[in-house]
Every structure is written in structure tokens, then in C-alpha cells.
Image 1 (spheres, rainbow, N blue to C red):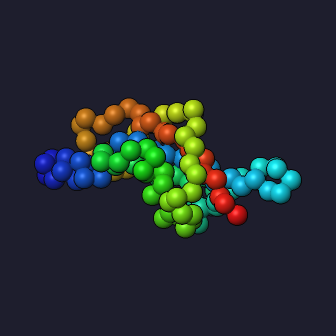
Image 2 (cartoon, rainbow, N blue to C red):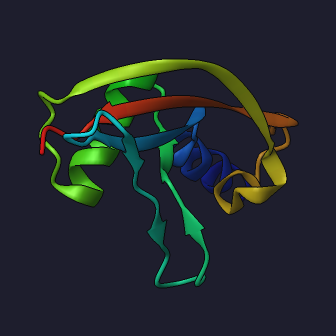
Length: 115
């Protein structure tokens, strides 16, 4: 059973999280930002998701944006200087590992929506 747990953990392991804030600059040169209300939890947030072992933070950010919004992968992305940590206990897919990390890094990005 422990081997199955570890194998499952390795397949679903999140090595980091990403947060992406879509933005638009209107004709008055003012910025507008987009956040989304989650249907499953009823709270508001930017685009978020987990990155895999074989994926860089920018690849994960691009993938999540395309999956969740349909914004093109060719849009202009900006890595923000903010990096935070999320306690690992928030991720159920890490619960069975005896080598579970204490925190998961969270990389932040912005994506410019063309129109």
C-alpha cells in the first residue's frame, strides 16, 4: 500500500504553484485587472494552478491561462518579483508521502490581454 501511495504521489506531485493576473490597458491608459469567482468554492481569485516536475513556472502559467481563459499562449507574460510559499498541507495529493515538503513555492505572473 505504501508503494502505491508513493507512486501516486510522484505522478501527481506539484513542485510549485503559479498565480497569474490578467490585465488590460484601456484607451485612457488605465489598467484593468481580471479575477474570477470560483464555482466550487464561491471565492474570488486570479488564475492559479500547480506546476509539474517537468514544467517551468512560465510553462505552467501559460498552460493554466490557456486552459482557464482561452487567452492565447502567445500573449505577453511578465514574471512578477513576488514569490511566496503555500503550506503543503493545503494539497491533498501530497498527504501520503513521508517526504512531504513543508511549503510549496508560488510564482506570480501577469498576462497582458490584447483587447
